[in-house]
Image 1 (cartoon, one colour):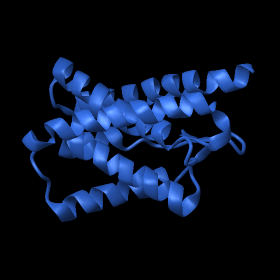
Image 2: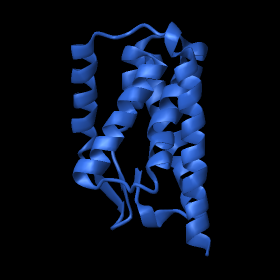
Image 3: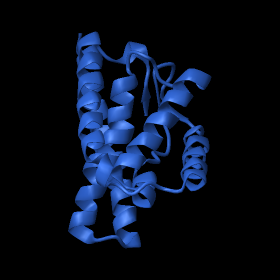
Image 4: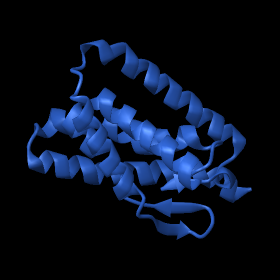
Length: 161
């Protein structure tokens, strides 16, 4: 679900970066209350998500790809703030090392694959269903559906004209 530079309008890219910056500001404001994970466990989990997200399925040749989104998993293991941190790191490395996603669309990619699952969907599902395995499955599924819907809204203006 990485968006490349040519898939959105510049205004949409700025909007995505603004939303992501605001979400990070909110996350950092509450981070002081978050429990710090064990560094090695966090690094191993983030590396696992990096590896799993490296397996892409082409959606639109040359413009967009789809893959597993690890935000829900990292959030269930480490909490919202650390899940968002792990996803931001994964997406930055994928962009730098593999040119997977563009620099112009980095804010949108973090919003779709980080903010939506980590700060919106998983906390809402946990509030509604608790912390069981069914809640994790529902959160993972809903994260992908919501991110895909938002992604289609982000791409629509560039497709229309």
